[in-house]
Length: 316
Image (cartoon, rainbow, N blue to C red; front, side, top):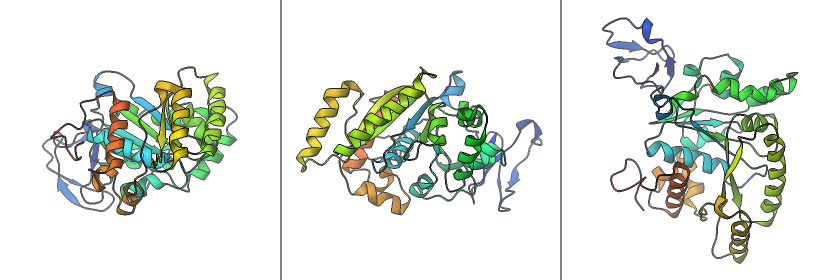
């Protein structure tokens, strides 16, 4: 089971069989804080719907080779929205910039690098950023993971799969935020996930990047026919700009039902990270929050999410 220190939020992986009977107090090995503890009061993330039903969680990459299209904004707010909807979610940041932690206002001491290299256990590498939302943070140290993958004679593409398979059953969704470009971490991500969500800013150069990305994905699909481009998400829709509307119409004519309802340009989406909050926490009544709630409904397949009374979000 995984026990979270209420003071420093450190995750401790503990074998339930080794817990003394009638224990009432635990002590954090990281910060020394003592806090009330009982087995019943300390649920592990291994209580997700996926595990209870004996199924693999849905694994989804937020990916496009071009930068500046809203990948991290989408990854963080989609993950946060699914968690608010009652799902157990693991957000994995494979970008050396490590912006997912910043956007959530947390500072984990470890993350994906330590899990992949085996320096730390899953319980030590995972960070509970919100209720039902766990983070494996990225950062500069991932540059070493890229080198590690590149140096493998074979099987480098399975690196992320090998790291996440042992823990994935704890979650209903695993959301992987990718970096711009086409690097070893992006490739190993696409060998792990089964679904791709591609944010597309409504500008001409992004359309060109989308076509190139599709070609790259097709090269992976030759080996993994389970990998599916599931969603195309138009971002930065500005009704004041005629080109935005035209590109949106072009996307819809080319890709039909793959195209999600667009994310409208909304200043709160760029302001929220400065406060370490998701858009649902920062401005729940904004267009940005409304649009990302629509995306969460689309991805989850549940139109009933965020009805009146749902926790932690404003209502449409």
